[in-house]
Image 1 (cartoon, protein in one colour):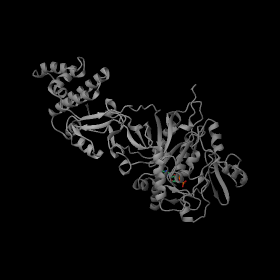
Image 2: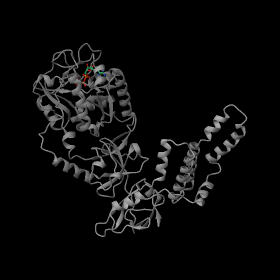
Image 3: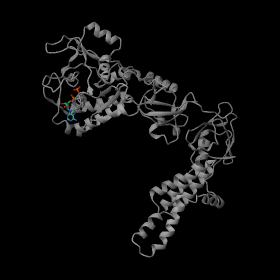
Amino acid sequence: MIQSDEGAVSPDEKDVKRSTTSTPENGLSQILRLVLQELNLFYSRDVNGVCLLYDLLHSPWLRALLKVYDCLQEFKQRKLVPATPHAQMLSYEVVELLHASPSSPEIQELRQILQAPHFKGATIKRHEMTGDILVARVIHGGLAERSGLLYAGDKLVEVNGVSVEGLDPEQVIHILAMSRGTIMFKVVPVSDPPVNNQKMVYVRAMTEYWPQEDPTIPCADAGLPFQKGDILQIVDRNDALWWQARKISDLGTCAGLIPSNHLMKRKQREFWWSQPYQPHTHLKSTTYKEEFVGCDQKFFIAGFRRSMRLCRRKSHLSQRRAGACCAGSCCSAVGAPYEEVTRYQRRPSDKHRLIVLVGPSGVGVNELRRQLIELNPNHFQSAVPHTTRSKKSYEMDGREYHYVSKETFESLMYSHRMLEYGEYKGHLYGTSVDAVQAVLDEGKICVMDLEPQGIQVARTQELKPYVIFIKPSNMSCMKQSRKNAKIITDYFVDMKFKDEDLQEMEDLAQKMETQFGQFFDHVIVNDELQEACAQLLSAVQKAQTEPQWVPATWVSYDPES
Ligand SMILES: Nc1ncnc2c1ncn2[C@@H]1O[C@H](COP(=O)(O)OP(=O)(O)OP(=O)(O)O)[C@@H](O)[C@H]1O
């Protein structure tokens, strides 16, 4: 017979004594006891502050806390096994201490947690052929695993003396849920306990997952919900369908179940086929923009264009569709649900990472980019775009644009050397990978804005882009901060932002986050301009100097480094 992984016990007197005497001589509880004895001598002598100090140190909260601390220290030092009975003893003592303290909602909650039996450390299933109740999996980091008493494949025979023969797993769970105090299992141990010798991998979730909404998950309570872009530590891939994972933001907790790569793809395909047919549409077409830079500027910045994104709605211009592929939106239906990632820290000798700014039209992508470059033009730079239009008299090849033939432009397009491109007034415009590389080769940081559909194209080992999403704040803040701002277009001079423009911006930002949020490394809300600019500078610096999660394929391991 063995004990459950977490059932709280009411130990007898002997047990309590054993636990209490195990408190270390020089433990904090012991020191506190001695200090209280000393203070007690002065309590009645009206020494300044002694009464207050005594009352503070005498509080049951502090004693409970120190007792837990001491016990944990002892656990660490003596490596007490099996850990479960010792943990139960500890929880019993803490509950006793809490009884003495004045009642509060927190104390009641803590008491309930310590007294209730939990069975979250393992899941059970019924064997299809024999009908036996088996331990399906032991959750990593849970008490069942840490106790070392239960293994996947163990056969459950009895729970608290009740035979589980012929019962459904739900009925067994019900018995467990109704149990109070000690839970006793009788098990037939699996003859060959599974050994997990897989390498730990980290992945970026390219889709979201809500276990409570998934009828196929074996145990919804054991599921791990996640959102697009979350980084997950995969701790167990033994099961072909259900993996165990933790979020890196929460590594202290026990793992949860997530669909395996294979299962998630199957779900995505099923979902895709279940959707009514919709003609293919992009989130937004890239309408290329004319150059914005004027001769009156302090210095020349290529790649700033007059935007037509907002006025497009009103001008009814027929524009050629976006150049950059729509990988994010179209492939997400059946694309890889998880992307293996690794920590990458740029070494000083490495080229800088490309900084990509993404955001809905009018949110301030160009404004922020300009401000960043103006801060230090020797350090930050835009890429010089390509065009098929002819050079104007005051322009210089390679400064405003690279002037190329239609054939050359198209060959760059078809060989995937264009990060984005579009057509305007019969001419092609676009930014090439080589133009970005030219900036990086000079040791500078290349900062570019990109339609979200283009992110996938830019995500290569050579550019290692760091994607920053510029997001509008809420409507009322935007109305205030954009009171005097002007929409920059070719068609309307000094056009102010109207409510519908701000609403469109907000809607588009939401769509972008929903469709492409998994690619965003950082999000900046552009409310107060100088604040947003400071955040951008800090994010750009961190991207270049601090470790970041990047696709594992971007990093080739050099054993020398
Ligand atoms: N935080 C801010 N506060 C006030 N005005 C702002 C702020 N951010 C941007 N603006 C102003 O809003 C207008 C639009 O900004 P910007 O041209 O940078 O938008 P965009 O995101 O590049 O969109 P588009 O590509 O359509 O031009 C500009 O006049 C800019 O000065």
